Length: 172
Image (cartoon, rainbow, N blue to C red; front, side, top):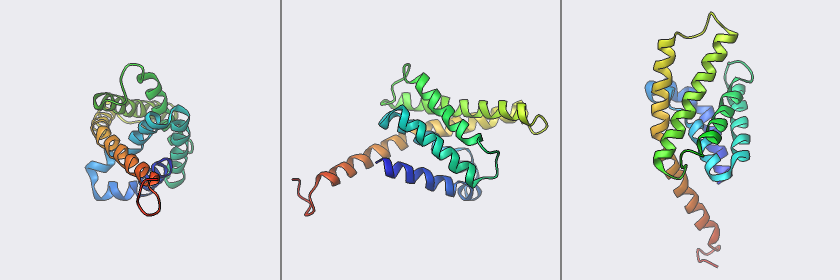
């Protein structure tokens, strides 16, 4: 399942720009990497989620024209948010998944806005555009969290069942 999660994250990173161009509203605000990082934290622990977030952020830096180091910092912010919020909300519960994914996405947008204000004051977004972007993105990402968690859990169960079967399909 680790391998599939990594491949899914890398595929999304490579296709993100193309998907955002074709499906403007949906994929420009939906951050599947945030949900995958939260899922990695839930399924594999904090260290695996941190490595996943760092690696996916580095891939985003490599395949985008942004500032180097921005995306690893943003996705490590997700891990920090999950680490803080997991004590308050249950990651195994859909309500907790929505709350944690939504809050993590808001943290990402807040850190990004502060970095733009500090590093590029002339390019920093207005408060209204920041608020609109953050709320739309957080809502879409948060609501997609339980769906993606369910799909990944089901896929993990199928992969485990396939691994437990012998070469002729019978359980050994």
